[in-house]
Amino acid sequence: MSQHHLSPLLKQATGVLAARGEGAYVFDQAGKKYLDFTSGIGVTSTGHCHPKVVEAAQKQVGELIHGQYATVLHPGLLALSDRLAEKMPAGIDTLFYANAGTEAIEAALRLVRQATGRPNIIVFQGGFHGRTMGSLSMTTSSVGLRAGLQPMMGGVVVAPFPSAFRYGWDEAAATDFALQELDHLFVTQSAPRETAAMLIEPVQGESGYVPATMAFMRGLRERCDKHGILLVMDEIQAGFGRSGKFWGHDHFAVRPDIVTTAKGLASGFPLSAFGANEALMEKGWPGSQGGTYGGNAVACAAALATMDVIEQEGLVENAAEQGAYLRKRLEELQSQYPAMADVRGLGLMQGVEMHTAEGKPDGERAGRLLKACEERGLLMLRCGPYQQVVRWLPPLIVSREQVDQAVDIFTEALQATD
Image (cartoon, one colour):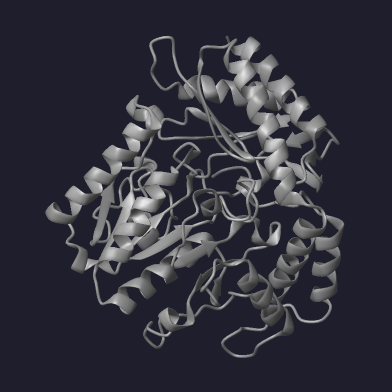
């Protein structure tokens, strides 16, 4: 049995035992300070323990901790729904709440099948949508997530994503290929009249921080409109300012029918949601939505405070500004280190793909880089199917000085692991 009685299948990315957090930093029990560029996998959007979020949560704990929202409503839920509806794309005006991103995806899956009467869902190679059975069946970012669980849920068809770097093509060629294959899929695997929805991340997360393209997103919208297919945007990681715009899909000027959100929504409290047009939401079947903890009162208070902080402190704009600066510094570094095969992403969602001298994905080097960074006081994570991508995921409050500090540490790690 493990020393701390935790499952041995929980593989720790770092050796840090965090005692407290403040802003962009966490501190271990000995008081050692770490610059946290993991943000709890994109969750602590306003940093650790932002005073306004802490105050809102503490106040709510003294008033109402849990009001199960299918039993009783509470003011925070209604206020958050009004605020969140204002941020949703035009036409999306009703919301369902759950705890985790995977639950929001599952609820959206139920709705699109029930609303259209069609069985199939098209997803895109490399997407990550969650770990519960329905969302996992739509996830193709890594075989390890699905290993030992086959067969997956039926009715899921996987189409290519325009991953230009992986194919070795330019963006236009990758986009043309992906759209041609999507059209081919309609005549070989899932006829449009059997296709309920397309589900896509505007920036693929676990697959290695790969943005979609403008032409690809517009091509999806055109095909959805032509065939009566719903377009579901998975904004769980890219949303709430992470990409340098409020929603990741804002970069592509495309209109989704459904938006799912979680992670940065409540600065670390468990809360997720999906939004749809009321007429669409009403097509779901009675009893298909529910849950014990969704829309928890404390989480809603934290989410309202998070939205206040994002707006008052200009954090979407800061994500764009600091993300562009981070990208510039990483690209300068890339010119000195050929092992940095690709630098990509949007806003404060940047990935560095590590390759061997032979041009193969180098997850081993990426792992050593992260350990060397940790030793120097910087926490980061890996992603990608080979764990070859070092991901840069600082809180939206990050400063230029903190970006410089992180890149300087990463440079030292590159030198130490060369």
